[in-house]
Every structure is written in C-alpha cells, then in structure tokens.
Image (cartoon, one colour):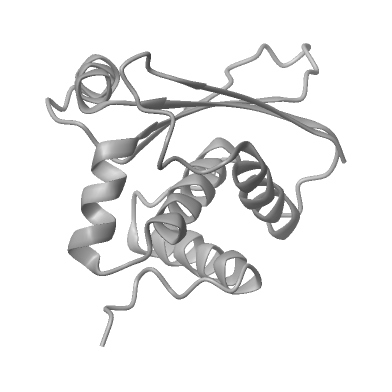
Length: 156
C-alpha cells in the first residue's frame, strides 16, 4: 500500500506547534489499515485558521462557525479508478481549543481528528446511533494501536 499525502496550510498559520507530516502519515496509515483499505491512497490535508475554517464550513455545510475537521470525499465517476480518497480540512485553533478544554494532549487530538476525517473519506459516518457506534468503535481501536487514550471517555 502506498499513501500519498499532500499537506498545506493557510498562509496565516504559524509553522510551529503543528504536527509533522510524518505524524499525519502515521495516523492516516493506521486508519487505512484498521479499516481494511487495500491499495494505494491519496489524501490532501489543509491546516487552516479559524477564519478559513468558518468560511469553508459555512460554504459547504451551511454552518457559520469554524469546526475541527471537514471531510470532502472524492466524487469520481464510477469508471474512473484513481486512488484519490479526498480532502481533509483541519482547523488548528479549534483543535487546540478543544484539546485544552477536554484536558487532552494536543498531538492526541490532532491524531483523533485526522483519523476521524479519514474514516469519513472511507464512507463512515455518524448520522445515526448505530453508525456512530461503529465509527467510534473503530476510532478507539485505531487510537489504542497508536497508544492514544479513548477520546470519547472523559478524563478522570
């Protein structure tokens, strides 16, 4: 399996304090492996500030606030066979704020949001309780493999 990752950031984003490309690769590879994705994959990640995150969320989800991660699965015609899974947009200030509020290490929260978004690109969702449980269960297993605590359990 070959994974191509295209990583970019908003020009206003600082270069410091963000996970390294190798971390994103590791997290995505873990998600692809545990979700039994075979073959090559391409994913694009854009790290954005709150303004860009809010603008994209408003434009594509009709919600006027910045959210932690947006997933844009590739919508290719059935006869086009490319390894493109889609794009993730991760809003760095929101991820940092949530990690702080939830008492989680920032790196762990980035891992969770990257894995969560990757699973969305693979077709997982949380639109109903059964789908949410299936997705969250897989997230927990992937994160446990990476020695990251269950993100759905409150810190004690």
